[in-house]
Image 1 (cartoon, helix red, strand yellow):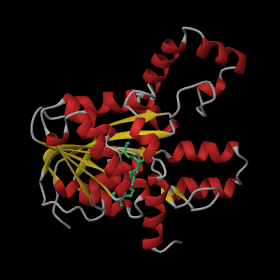
Image 2 (image 1 turned 45 degrees about the horizontal axis):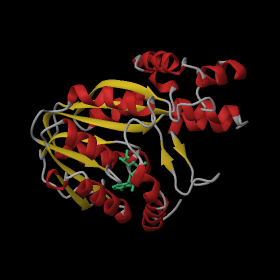
Image 3 (image 1 turned 180 degrees about the vertical axis):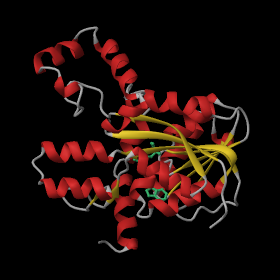
Length: 282
Ligand SMILES: C[S@@+](CC[C@H](N)C(=O)[O-])C[C@H]1O[C@@H](n2cnc3c(N)ncnc32)[C@H](O)[C@@H]1O
């Protein structure tokens, strides 16, 4: 296992390499992945108050939150270059006055308890930060009672499916299902943790959060995407669907499937929403 400092350095380097691409990314480019996230987030957003965008990277979600609410927003991340990209983006959109950008670690959030009306932690910061439990505990601590946390996570069930399709041994797949841990190898620079919805619900509960919604979010909507439903369509038909005007209909079908909570875990990613019901500070 990597020492914490080296691991953090690798996370920063990995994400900072994406700063250039991230500066051009906009919410909605992946209509399935982003669309399901937004339809899970929007109903729980406060009209006014303070929002935290934890591990918010280049600020794509902070922009969306600033545009769609009257809230003030705090965006933090550990990757300095991404925050510079976020600052430039916010300035260009004349949103700098609405979003405070700072460097911070999700495992030691520098804010007082009960500071935010809504917390977003999208794109796996909980999974990759090295201590998911500490991250969830901190996110819960800074959330006000009755506020909502929306978090993007990797799905263990999908990882197990992917491992099976790439010929992993049954022992390895069963171990993956048990721990949700994928080691820093096979091209990955750092270990990451995935979740089943049940596992996340029980971690959240331990920290005073009650899970109120879960949806699946396959990534990379397109004919080559690795998804149980899309890859089940014969390849010629699949290409035809994506070439023709059938694309929106497939998109709607998949949205309906993955917004069904009992199927969520089949998607590569999850979007979970949990309400703060109690927190005893331990
Ligand atoms: C895939 S990116 C997602 C960024 C953004 N939330 C989004 O959805 O576009 C994951 C982010 O988590 C950040 N991150 C990883 N570990 C972190 C930590 N310990 N504290 C704060 N941010 C962290 C990374 O720097 C990166 O920006």
